[in-house]
Image 1 (cartoon, one colour):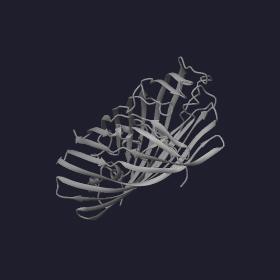
Image 2 (cartoon, helix red, strand yellow):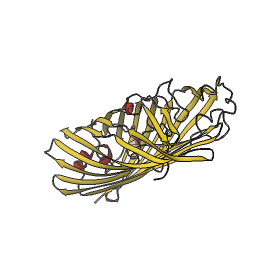
Image 3 (cartoon, one colour):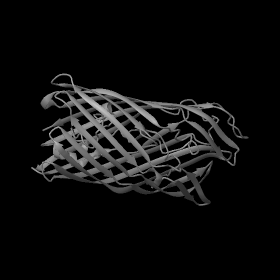
Image 4 (cartoon, one colour):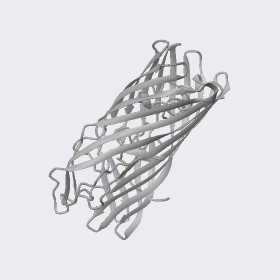
Length: 401
């Protein structure tokens, strides 16, 4: 196996199957661009293209024939540190510049109706991702973090069955790969950990059609257990290393309603079991490095609406509140995360048999998080605040046959 990194795990925002996470910690909501404009409200109930394979496989029962959907989302986070009393013998240097940068998160899905009540689907996406890298390798927090990157790729075959006109069920299997790297400074040279692994999981969902104008969806995506294998190096000294990590499970409750001929409304409540990330033990030839997370379970609330402006176009808006799993006492320079509010807008153009194009944009507002993180028994204490924000831009193409 390649290398292993595991302090990189508490990281923000995504890239091509890696990157900068726009959801709390390093979870990625950007599994399609069609839901971006409504802040992913109604994600398990909308079921208007094949990306429902990820959010709720039961939603495939709303799609006839063969459906294809593919897109890409660009994310530009910004993490700029402002020093306010950093101390210690090693605590000198600048503010590190902007640790964020543009990343791309692609996705692709298809579904096919096998029989009147049976549906099959497949998706490729990136549920978790991180990429932060400080511009100045001699910045004041270099002993806390230099580079943190995590990449996941998820392969998700799914099946759905329509019990009747009111109830549909779906199930999926997930094969997920992970690749991670973390670096920081030490008095003995650069600390670097790299590693990779793969794991199996599952997801399940149900869709309830309460009326032709209202649907409720519920879905659950299992945790993923990894044992990363790779290398740990300090300066020129390197050895094999391992670390066990459990990425959290997620539950979603969604509602979609056709309010009038032109207006749709949707809502979303999601729960992520981040407390599975308590600490990371990196085992190597000379001992064990312990990376504490102390993450707490978190909630996300979203509301969105779509307005049919013409026969072929929709305008969409959304807002969401995304609670961070970290606390002021445990915040890391690798993931200077905080609660965030999503403000989103976008639109859809329906070209009929030629397919649909969705565009979406989100601005993520984060209250500037504070940090007080010590290393080497206080020889380097990073103390100050971050100026955090993110821009997300996505495009999705969907077509049916």
